[in-house]
Image 1 (tube, one colour):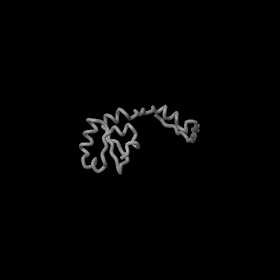
Image 2: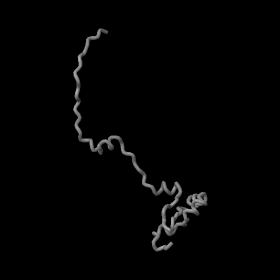
Image 3: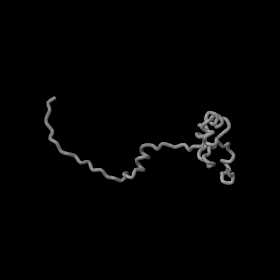
Length: 96
């Protein structure tokens, strides 16, 4: 594979052909945990990077869950005005 096409950050990773990664998956996972991300290629093209859960947690953005009032205030229906349509019904006297 021509290294000029590989982004510099990926070129520093150990690369595995897909068939080798499949055959030695336990080793790929162990190396990802111990040494860092492992690059997997198909027909010489980068397709995936296997990294440890700790690395992923460090790199992935933390997603904040919005509060219910914040979520409702962003709703496209926030400006709707609902009418309270009541139906009059007869009331009977009850002796207690």
